[in-house]
Structures are given as structure tokens and as C-alpha cells.
Image (tube, rainbow over all chains, first blue to last red; front, side, top):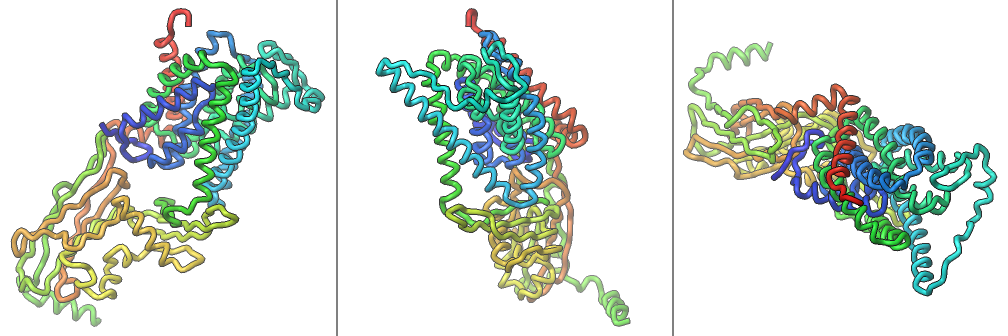
Length: 304
Length: 247
């Protein structure tokens, strides 16, 4: 059955949209990422106008993150204090992102900059995670325990405004989480992503939070940022299609639950390895789109 | 002065002498509801006081609401394909359908087509903004809009049921602009327009779709909050519903 989307002003097949929500929700629950980095390009590929895709993906990310976060909350695996600090940075970042979005649109290079940043971010994050998880997996197979290398953290330890994050067993300056939150908030506004694919590695490798609280905490941060970005997108761009969101959300929340359960059976380094593969695959696909000869060098846009 | 004389001459000619076209539509309103996947509108017409059927042509044009068309061209810079040049055509129809009894070029000379703006390449934009020759941009836009079913050139798509009775079917795609559409039926005689008739119809959303669209535009904050609330509710509900004992 085809359904008509009142904001996107086009009709889509609901099975496709629910299926898309389900698949992306599954990954979301599995890895503790929102999945926006997959869903936004997929919706655009399906023909949804990119402004609507960006604005509506956020609803899906919120819903599957809530579902995942509640599951983590029951396991007491959320550091609310850390999430709160990051959301504070995220709110400022979102405002900055919306401003930057408008600026890039005026320059006419929106698509290029979004694609390039996707490729650079996903490529470097994915590469880093792949390298680390492979090393850990190899070591585990050989029976060697890899010592956690205290990667040059002297400068982070030297920062002021320290705070105790009991749940994460950290005593840390609030500046790094605020800066990470800010960056992710800005990305959320520009790319229609929650930013989990950046927060998760940043929490693991920069903040050195224990892996078991990383998933739940990143989900809470994502919920905070996507709620604000959804409202900003609705009020400034009229870009949220609630009918599209409904069908994505129905698939997404079910997928997220299934993902959380599947994730419980995998070890941390296996999860990181899989996420790295998915992230790198998306990065390669987008990079290919930038360098491959376009099927048509012209593109037409209706409206002002 | 000369115009007055011309008008007087026209009035003086017996009305019965002029060949004329009269047309109608199968519907004057297309309603977009939740199951809208595109539709057809039928334009039918008849020639009154017909003269000889030879040297006579019918052209049916359906023109959607005006919009701007922006065309960008990508170029390879340092191995990456980047939007370099652009052209913007203001005041172009968002939907343009043209059916003719013969190919346009065989019906009238280019000057006449230009004068009446008949054919996607003869339409007159209100303004063109470009640093380059806009022609290739325009050709690309027409080609791509044609692929989406928004611009159609259908030579020979006028069905004659009898010598003076004809119809044509206009396919309206699912992703179409809302607003007023104008159907113009041209009667050509020996390469020039003899008679024109124009009829409007409207495409609009109805029911829930309409209310949601208005809600999103009139109360964006409330709409955004509703979207957020819906996400939170669904996230919470599945979490509760799918919770297994001990999980």
C-alpha cells in the first residue's frame, strides 16, 4: 500500500519505509548508535528530498535511542551526569550547526561539504575502530591480554574544571565532554545524524569510559540532541514529515530491541569490529559517489 | 486608432463564420489524500463551425503553478565532482504537459511557438540568472523533469473520435506541485492560432494530509513537539512491550 507524505509531498511504499526503519533500528540497538548516518543517505537515495530526510531521520533516531536507552537503563549502564554535560555542549553545537547549515546553503556547496565531512569522519573513525578491534581480537585469540595503553592523555588530565563521574569511574575535566557534545550537536543539525558513531569512539578512546556505560550514555546524549534538532528543523525548515517519521519509528523501535538482544551475545571488541566495517562501508560508498563520473553532470531543483 | 478599426472589423464579421474550439475536463479538482499515487485528467474538446479538416491542428497544454528551476552542473576538481556552474530560471511551470495532433515543429514556425510559449523550449522564463550560456542547462532541466513525468511532450497524443471531436489523457504524477493548473486548448489553422480556450483545475491536499501540512506550517513548534512526543512514546512503548522477564 502506498502512503502519501504530506511534507515530502510524495508517496512511498510503507513496507519499504518500515523495513528501512527496522534494519537501521537493529544496528542502532546493536551498536548504541542512532543510525542516522545510514538512514539519511538511504532516504535520499529513495527519492525523499534531502531537507526532509535530514529533518525526519532525527525522529527515528530519537525513538530507537529511547528504546535502546531504556534497555540500558535497566542494566544501570548509563552515566547521566556525563550525558548531561555532553548535552549542554550539544545544545550550543546544534545552534551553531543550524547557522552553518544556512551559510553553506547560500554558498551552493551544501551537498559537497556534507559528503566530504561524512567521508572524512566515517573514514577516520571507522579506520581507527577497525585497527583497534582487530588488534584486540587477535590478542584475545592468542590468549594475550592487551594492556590498555594510556594514550597521551596528559593534556586532558591537565585541563581545569574537573568533575567526578562516578558511574564511569572517572575524575575528569568537563571540557572534553562539552567539546565532543558541541561537535556532535553541530553534526546533528548539518547531517541529520544523532552522532553516535562519533560519540561512541570518542567516549572509548578520548574519555576512556568503560565500554559497558558507553552505549547507554551515548544514547541519552543522542536523545537530548535529536529532540532539540527536531524542534529546530520543524520550526526553521518545516522539514519534519510526521507520517514518514511514524512509519520509520514503528520499524525502528522494534529493530532497536532486537539489536540490543543480539548485542548482548557479542563481546565489546566484536561489536566494535562490526560497527567499524559498517561505518567504513558507508564511507567508501560516499567517497565513490564523490569521485565516480556522475550518471548526469546536471542536477535540477524546483522551488526557490 | 488602428486597433479600434481592427476590433470593429472583427465585430462586423458574422460570428458564425469563425471556427472555434470548446473544451472541458473530466474533473476540476484533484484531491491528494493518503492513498494518492498520481492520477489522470481527461481533456476533451470539440471544434465548432468547423472548416476543412486539412491544415488544422490541435494543441493541448497543461501548465502547473509557477516556480523557480535551478540547474547545477558538476565539474571535476582535484578528482572530486563539484557543483561549479548554475543557471536559474524564474517563473517556469512546475508541471508542463503538451499534446499535439502532429509534432509541434510541423504545426507552426518557431516564432509562433515562441509567441505563445508552446513547448518546453519555447516557454519564456520571467528571469534567467546565469554566468554561462543557459541553453544546455535548460535542455538538461527539461530532460530531467521529463524523466520525472513533470514535463511531457506528446506529439500525436490527441485522439480524434470523429472529425471534430477529440480528447487527450494527461497523466499527473504522484510528486506534483499543489495549486492552480491551467489547461489551454489551441486550434491552429495553417500555422497560426485560430482559437484558444483556457480552463483551470486545482490540485490540493485534503483531509488529514491537509491538516498535517497546515499544522506543520502554522504551528511549527507544536508540530515539532508532537513529532518528539511521538518518538518518545513509541520508544518507550516498545521497550515496555518487548521487555522479557529477566531481560
